[in-house]
Amino acid sequence: MKTFDRAELRAFLKAVDANLDRSAKMLIIGGAAASLRYGATRKTQDIDTWGGFVRAVENAVEKAREATGLDVPVAPAGVAEAPYHFEDRLVSLSGFRHLIVRVPDRYDLALMKATRGYQHDFDVIQEMHKRRPFQFAKLRNRFDTEMTHVTAKVGGQKELRDNFVALVERLFGRKKADEARVPKAKKLDLRV
Image (tube, rainbow, N blue to C red; front, side, top):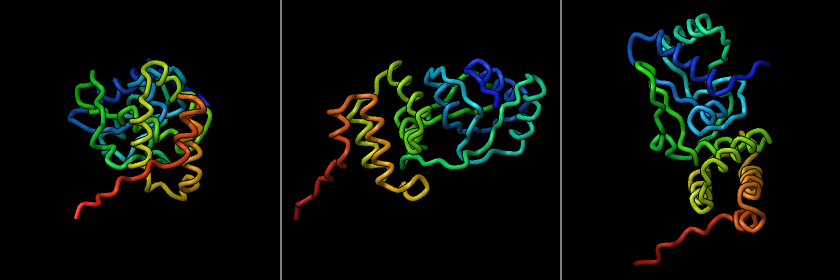
């Protein structure tokens, strides 16, 4: 299957934008988001979106394929899990006239990609970490407090925790991975 780098994705989205006559939104997740916003160099096979988009965007995508010769698949992700409140932290991409392109913040995107535990997803997260290091405490806190709803779609909380621990070990080493094995205890409010 054909893969696309950052320059191709950007050119494709610029062509989508050029074929819109009014504002339209697209929330991009996955490898395309990592490439477009966070500098990941690993090529991606598609542009995964969170949710659908309006008919005008569908038409603009078809016209962009014709105009650029880039047959980039663009569709809602089949399976995707995100932290609670991730939509409150979305980051906008600039350079578009009508197309409003947003992506998850880097911590949310890392957690979204880690849910499956695939090697290529970990590679992308590690590349993001090398470009701008994640803070272990912030990543762990967001995982422990905002990924509690993820269930059987990706194998349940145990598999999710195992994937997170594997990611932490890769980014921060064995000691931090051992810390991440156990959820942080929630502080109880004992005031009467």
